[in-house]
Length: 481
Image (cartoon, rainbow, N blue to C red):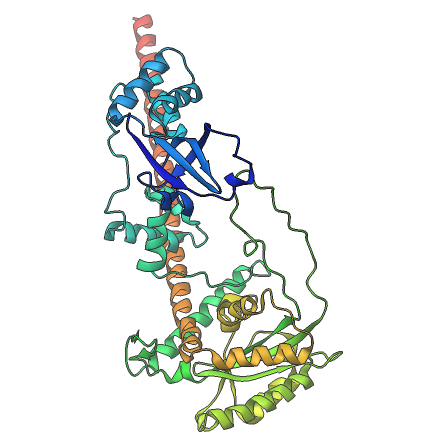
């Protein structure tokens, strides 16, 4: 057994007085070799060895490390099989191995090999097929993942990995890197959609998609290293101005996921008390387009949004467009907002008709088709998370600076994603219609088969009845004869 010595200093160990000790056993966790550096860093554990204190020099401990005897993994597994045959449990086997060889195999591996030997496995080499295939991100798997996601939009990564028999790491790489999927809805759809709502949603998506493609001058879009979008000159999308209202809190508490921390198994369980969000809040309204923010304003304490107040906001928005987007008022403004009462009131409709603004149709109860909901408010709330503001002015100033500092490509991506979402909606609906047609065709074929079987059974019964009557006639003739 090889022996090596080294000087090791650890404040946790010197908390005890070692001046009266000449020989004291300790266990040291190392990364590689038996040097001091890996011990002090205390990073990933690869093996452990036993050391003895042979002398103390102030705060320095001179240790001797006992190196385990060299052995091959096949020999270790042979020992596991032998001890398992002697009816030792995996924990006892692991202790026996550690006492002789040191930490050469984990307890989990001992359990796995004991289960294999008890199941009749006799080979001491690695099982075939262990490990992940390097082809996990092949084109075939990428295609299968895309088909799964298009069919079931709420699949989890572990469900995708389990379905394709690949690791979650590869599933994550395929979903986010290869297919560039992202979670787009910042909140649940607040109401169950009826068939009428779904038809209205599909009709609106098809019409907007048709208008977007018909106004496109250059097909396709890419982005350069600087994040700028190239190859797109879309008059329809660039004419869209979108906006919505949201609550802004003086203190936005961190989420449960944000509060997660690393801990040891022996660490006490952290508790997170449920605390209500700060009562101090203001209602903020944000309007923006593909080129950046246009207007941000807040309501005064006690003020509510009604049709008259919303028209005042639209007056400010019109002035902001005149200053920041020269010529757009002449070319035409397409306003995208939801179907809230102040937005659909007669006073608001009269204001929009007065200035010739077009309203972009928005299906009811569909926040995933509202750019502010699926693209802007999520990052804004994350920016405000775990921050405290003393007054409304400080909060408003922070939000305004955040909107001004966002890169232009962020806003452009949010507006252009509206077209991609409409394409997905159309594809999903077409696929759903195709599936319904296939189901109807299958039902029709089943009904025809059942009808055909029924006719065959009736014909068979008629033939049997005729044969029976014919036999009765023959028997009667024989009796008469």
